[in-house]
Length: 125
Image (cartoon, rainbow, N blue to C red; front, side, top):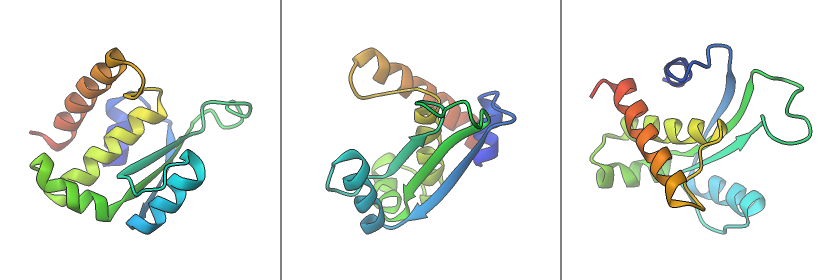
């Protein structure tokens, strides 16, 4: 599914890492890197920004997904557990390529539209 997401975005040579964790593990990472002491559904660590962004031009970054949170949130989104994980992958990849939903309403709207479009393309619904 990750490869399909990248292909749909035209990122044929791109690489990313995926780490599936529990709530305690993602809370530890969230606290350490974002100073938010709570579990979250997905964390994205982009590699195409910053001082060393040109060292590996095909490397997008790292995604960390809490499977526990995905399971809990799937009902709220009307998705099964695997679809929820795919939605979180889509969301995370969009963050890796520069989309942001925090900060401006315009950014949030653009990301939401792209996420819906890409998700529905990927799962065929």
